[in-house]
Image 1 (cartoon, helix red, strand yellow):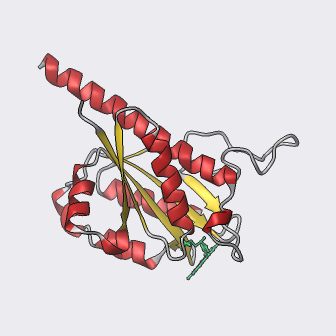
Image 2 (image 1 turned 45 degrees about the vertical axis):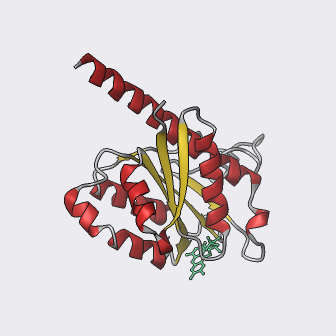
Length: 199
Ligand SMILES: Cc1cc2nc3c(=O)[nH]c(=O)nc-3n(C[C@H](O)[C@H](O)[C@H](O)COP(=O)(O)O)c2cc1C
């Protein structure tokens, strides 16, 4: 059986984003027929570039630093110029996640940067696909998508705590994103295989 490949390409300065990257990976890995790869973008090996190029879907993750993707993630973006030029990643699925210290933290900008990056590579952006949580009198911070974001998975990490204190709602939301991307990637691969056999 050919496996569908989901890569999670992330940067993490202090481990918080790495924790959410792992939650995305776990969600994706829970879908049958999916293999997952974590790629830390500040030290991409040749083998990992091949993994990214061969992936059916890439989920991008960066912490929000000064209201946008962290600089080291931006360096990774710029290091994909040749791939952009040759449109190597065109038509792969893409999605994104971020974390910040403040509840808002201006992190929408980060998800927008990730989605524009994916669009410039002609990738197909997968939204979070969840209704907003914690937005009613009966809601709570433990609702899925507690920060009420649509464009990707958003998390908030207290500045005085490490990644081990990641909020359970944010972990579950990241897991959801991984599962959603993987499920769509599997469906697309199955449709492509049907098309190929009919041709
Ligand atoms: C240089 C720098 C800039 C930051 N800028 C923001 C910001 O604009 N908004 C915010 O809410 N948090 C900001 N933070 C907090 C981080 O987003 C937060 O600590 C995050 O969990 C770090 O993730 P990481 O451990 O993966 O690096 C900033 C942190 C650093 C180090």
